[in-house]
Length: 278
Image (spheres, rainbow, N blue to C red):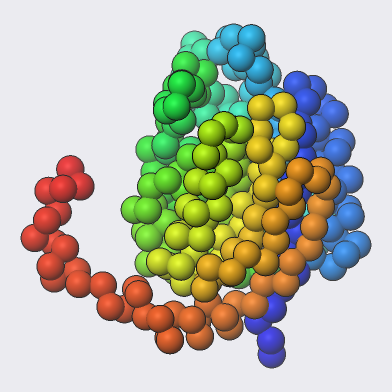
């Protein structure tokens, strides 16, 4: 039995209207299912674009519960009807009702319409002139990878790809595919960083990187899929829409065998420097 699966990647330009973004998203799920994809991956800020003018309070009013909000419930229902796994993203209401900031959350929904993982973005983009922490709250855990019909998936979000510790942890926990929904800002050298970082995370872990990105507004597009040897198998440029790639999980295991970077790690040496991580 082969280990190759069809995966759909969406590059979209989210508007500020979450109802419109939901309708577009549901159409993409239908299209992916018709094209026999087992998994569809959406970019960060799928629910809505939050402009610099939007206050944290206004964004919080737009946020929903991950468990019973309309945005995710509709996606769960469509996942079940179309028999497809979904990686979606949303602004999630905080645990404290009075909190005016929200979580930037990735949601993994299986083909039975059940939420199997909720990942709240750990690394907020307080860099290069931006300060996400004014509107967003940081999560405090890396979620263990989950088995899906397309492979074992670890979740990251955007800025997380600049921190190699996170992808290494997910790879060691059994991830075969890292899905990193993103809204990568345009700017000097930003597209070079994007491609270089995605390739590095793939190569050093012998893993597929699936990185759907926002396009337009202030974002750079270039949604990418990188194979475990660092080969770019998809680059969507500035095109809005959906693309399908074949992901061959046997390639993860053959490359990890021929280039055994995980096996060749010297944890006996690293543990003497554990203080560097505290």
